[in-house]
Length: 365
Image (cartoon, rainbow, N blue to C red; front, top):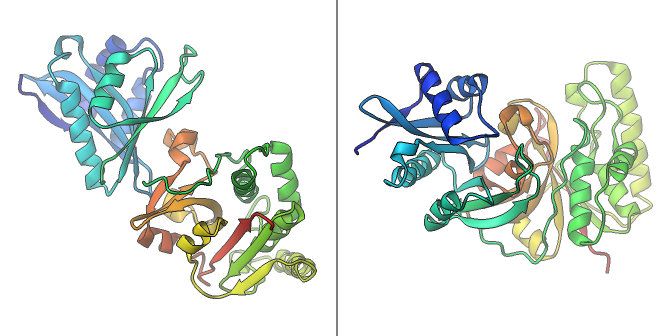
């Protein structure tokens, strides 16, 4: 059997649905999902056919702005199993991911699917998590990962993951993760997420509810007993460029001035200017929250907080609290995201003023 591998087209829809029904009893992709994957997804749907008969497919999704890919689904027709087609599809998907500058490929597999698990582990995938009640029938999933580019897990500090529960609480969610990393027994709760937002919000942003300023987050962390460094490219007030209404601007200035006055009564160390030395901060036990432009991740121009979990010579690793379900993402897709240093530098500059901001938490001696 010498299969032909190619990208799926809309004309494959009927065959893909037939294969899906043959291979899966739950969690099936429907016609609408396949159509989206073929025409709009930031990914590739690869099919294998012999003499015009579709015998398998593999679907990989790329996480925009990062070096992470996810094997979303793979299916092999009954008559083609045992002949190495699954391995061939997996290898070709890895090549696709490499061509899109991805360093890691991740996937989920049912715990009661030993054949699929064996395929992945034979090909270098390692287990790194188990998720209970993951599938529609309540079965558990194992999460596997392979570094296809060739992350060291070098830090003693393990950063827990907490997804933001509203569209405006990325900063509080990141602060919860940082506090949880430094205090491993700390509970990460929505009650505190919203309380931090109330303490740290600038009241007005470009639209909707206000986001949290670096000064507000620094104060919230200091009040909770942490040593805090605040690094900014400018003193502020911040985010005024995105607001046209003079009344809103005036309110934002007043809030900023109050945060600044409160910071004078703390030992928060403030640095204006200079580059963020992530290797040194991480080696010193710091847990950095970094303001980025979400454009490079979601194509929306908004300030967004992420937390740095690690870095090495090639990548900066991030927890992104925003789980974008419209892109078929799961929380796993937003953890330890590998971002090249060049891409990270571009992310960390927000707006016309090229604002850079970071809040770094430490244990208090």
